[in-house]
Image (tube, rainbow, N blue to C red):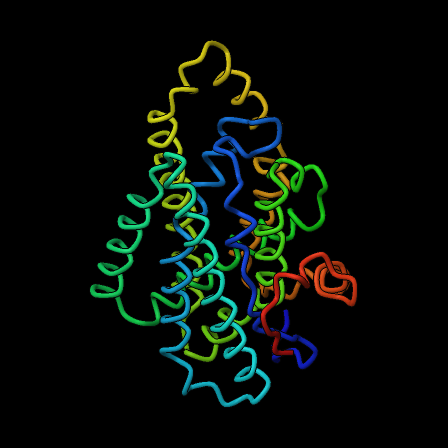
Length: 289
């Protein structure tokens, strides 16, 4: 278990925009026009803007309790990165809305649900939720960054760029909320209970969103298309036993996000995306290291 803040963890806030490139994304943008894949990625994007805002508020609440100078810098980077994630996914959602996805309804539902949570539960509980959900996103991020099949299933190049960039930054700041939770005095019991609750809630909520989204798509009723998509999703790395084991490892008593060392993975993708000839350099406005 990692007990101290890693001094080599860099969490840069990159001023980047995908809005222009996302305007040409077709409705069924997942690989080979996959039906469920497109609706699943759209449903994930729908919860990101207000979810990221919730993460920022949860961590910022305990910002003054952080005395470690390295962690202070990482908290600032975390807040900056999450703010940009929310903005870029909201821009993507605007386009998805024009394509007929019910993402704006899902955005409103997410915002209201999180507002109720913050009103009823203590700040430590909300930080526990943030740490747990950050483990979800970091685990999915590592899958996207390591598995070409997972990246390929995203489909459209502009959407793939959006999710790969998001995955890189989730990997960069994957331990920040967790470390702040430890400093806040949050208990192990609350940490693991929150993960158990959110595991069920997140999967159930996402399933409902995808079903609702599919019901409003006339392609769902085209003979054979939904059946083919179900078979494809069932074989995908996003529902593998390995992924499930990684998610559940969070409840191990001595767990820490840095138990899974992604230093080389992060360095490789930083160079690929933002090095001198990086594929996303043209989308940067400014970058803070």
